[in-house]
Image (cartoon, rainbow, N blue to C red; front, top):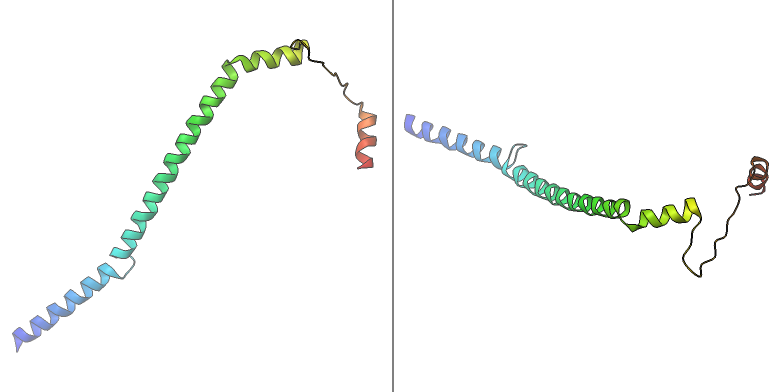
Length: 104
C-alpha cells in the first residue's frame, strides 16, 4: 500500500513538474517564443547597423568630396559652370513676408 501511494505521489509530482515546464509562464513555449523574438531583434539591429554604416559613408563622401567645394563656390562666390545662368533672388523684407503670410 505504501509503495502504491509513493508511486502515485511521484507520478502526480512528475505530471505537475512537466506541466509547469511546458505551460506556465516560465515554460518551454515561452522560452521558444522569446528565442524567436531575440533572433528577430538581432536581425533588426544588424540591418540598422548596416544602414548607419551606409549613411556615415555617404556623409564622408559629401563632406570630403567635390560636392562641398562646388556648393561653396556656387553659393558663396556665385560662380557657375560655362553656359549656366545664375538667378539671384533677394530676400523679402519683413513687411513683405507679413503681407505674403496673410494672403495664404
